[in-house]
Each structure stands twice: as structure tokens, then as C-alpha cells.
Length: 357
Image 1 (cartoon, rainbow, N blue to C red):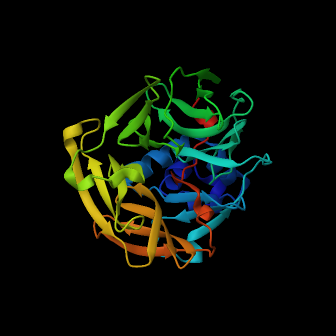
Image 2 (image 1 turned 60 degrees about the horizontal axis):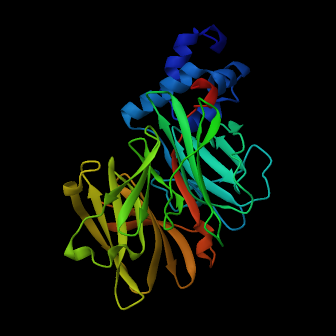
Image 3 (image 1 turned 180 degrees about the horizontal axis):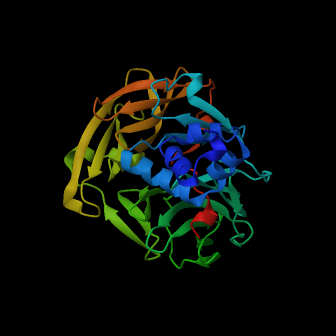
């Protein structure tokens, strides 16, 4: 039977079982396949929901370097560390000249900003993109901390961005709602120690600031704080720390000092029940090898990706939480930590905004 003879529902059912990588390859089979795969909202939703239920979503890491080059790493493949696990990426739109900030991701969509003016939603797998209205920050402000998320109850994507005056007290915070298609000002004094992308969990974004977690709730459109575990083992733990999500739970990790200022290990703690202080539990301690420096940890599920420096060379290593050890290394060479200064995880999908709003 020719492909054109197959009923539409049969084609959709077959395609929904395939991973996004294979589906993108099949867009070259025919114009009909290309149209279905890239533009059919039913397939996009069915494929994404099925992959979520089967736990077969392909998790990748996007990062960019000081040379503005974008790369995507497959975090699930056994060949992590090999050049085959990496893809070079490019934006499907003309890039403004400002610095790139990867704001976050959800449902296979990445949120990107150039400076404090140009904001985009982008699907790296399908190359779909949408430019957002300009937030209208005052001149002279710099993007300080930010995040993005999705509210299922209202079928709405939201973006949060805070801009600060580096040399003065001025600060502005705004939130964009895709459904309303406007930016609104968030009235809050903010936090001087928050920076970069927040971690998304339970429709809120989180930053580690000193000895507490700062959270912005997208549904309530307000801030709240959570205490870190008060334990004798974590004195001086969070001088340099990070927040992530481990197996659906909020996770924090921070360096332990050896002989100042050398770090000797990092502790991982998880909050087993969200926003319940007494549920903090130590997950494990990851010890450093002599002569090895770790400067950044991105916690995702049962693993973390860390930026590792050895002899002036920087690389990305994958750490397994269950085995409590470093497994695989990916490096493109280079002597600057800034090669990996901004990175976000994302799960591949066919979703695009006009399916959802």
C-alpha cells in the first residue's frame, strides 16, 4: 500500500511512537509527512504525551560559549562524550548583537533573550520560533535573573525577567504571559544574590541565594523563600551552590571547602516534599580527585552535569547520583570556564506555540 493510501489516523498513530529525532528525519520522505510532522497539532500533542508516559523523552543540554556558538548534547546516549552525542545549533532567526541568555525550557521549547530587549520562544528540534513583545526595561539595566514555565490549568507559558542597574539601586522585574501577550511589572524589591536562570518545578522558578531558596510562583505571581537544611554538616556548604531537580524533588548542592580556597567535595540534598522544611534529606557527597576543579553543577533527574577543569582544560562531565561517581566526559577543548557559562536542559518535542494558545 502506498503511503498516500494510508488513513490519516493510522499515520498519526504510527508516528506518535517514534522519537523526535527520527520524525525530523522523516520530514524528507514526502510533503505530506513533512506537513504532518511539523504542523499537525494532534501528532505533536500525542507524541509528547506518549513519550512522557513511556518515559522516553529525549533529554538534551543546550549551552553556548563566549564565541556565541550553540551546542546540544544528548544526555541519555551511551555515547555521551563522543562527538556523535553533540549537535551544532543555530537560531532560525537573525541574531541581535547583544549577549545571549538561555532563560529556561519546558515542553521542548527553549526561551532565549538577547540583552534586555529581544526575547524569543524557540523549538531547537523543529526550528519553530516566535518573537515576544519587547519588555520595555529602562535604559542602562542588565538582565540579572530569569526563568520560564508553563501553567497547565490556564494553558499559558510565562517568562520572568529581572534587570538591575550594575552601578545603582534601580531594578525592574517583569513577567510575560503568552495568553495575555503582554509584559506586566512585578512589584518586589528583588534579591541581590539571585542570578542567571531559575530552576523550574511545581510551576515556580527557584534560585539559591545565600542560605535560602528564592522562588517565584507563576500562578500566584509572587515570591516566597524556603530555608535550606540546618545541619552541622553544611556549615560553609553554600558559599558556592546550585539548585536543581532530582527525581521530581527540589535539590541543592554546594561545595565543601578543603584548605581555603580549594573545594574538596560537593554535597547534594533533596527536599522530599515540596516546601516542607523537615523533608530535607542528604542524597550523597561527591568527592573531588586531586588537581580537579568543579565550578558548576546542573542537577537533572538521577544525574548531574558539571563543568570540570583539569590542567586548565574545561569539559562537561556527567555524574550519576546512584553510583555517586563521574561517568562520562564531553570536551571540545578550551581554557576558559566561560565556554560553558550558560546551559539549560530541554526535552525534545514537536510542540509549537500556536498549538497551545
